[in-house]
Amino acid sequence: MTLQQTTQAMPDWTWEFHGHRCPFMPIGYRMGLAAMRELGIGRTTDHGVFALVEIGVGHPQACMADGVMAATGCTYGKLMMERLGYGKVAMVLHAPGKGSVRVYLRSEFQDELATQEFFAYRKRGIEPSQVPPEVAQRAIQVVLDAPEERMFKVARLPDFAFSRPKSSFTKTKCSRCGEYVFERYVRMVDGKPVCIPCSGFAEARPDVLKGGQ
Ligand SMILES: [Zn+2]
Ligand SMILES: [Zn+2]
Image (tube, rainbow, N blue to C red):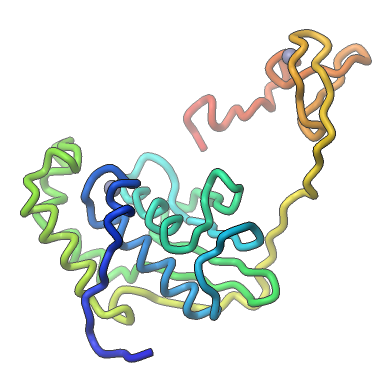
């Protein structure tokens, strides 16, 4: 792997998948590539590798998660991605047996990128697809042209631990609504199995429902 400066190419499908052209999707894509190279792994097709993005909600850098998914194959739908909610432009790639690595978008690079006109539009509430294409492209080009070592702080996390509950196909019918519920999510009310929405229990993802993830 050469360190000479080259422009990162983005597959067309990543833009189509993401929906608009912005600088943070390619940041995530490059983060994913850097993390995979550090761990010596390729794009994952099945399960077993996890991308834990440190972004939260309520700040506009969350687009990076789509780039991380595109690069690593750690899709949200396959339960290979979690949002840690630290409010940082960073990710951890965890590959059991290979190790874990954290990639952080350097503060200096964040400052440099923030001077792009693209963000003046975004601060006025203009959606990325409504930003003049040449303005968006200038910001994207800064991301694609930057040498990786100037963009990212990459660090191995030797003690990082992450696991998922064991998968189970066992399901039970809710005694109230009659719908199937996978066993981890069954609650008991008056001795009968119920689903979380029927249970009235406040634990029904109150964080998500109240917008406070
Ligand atoms: Zn975006
Ligand atoms: Zn129910």
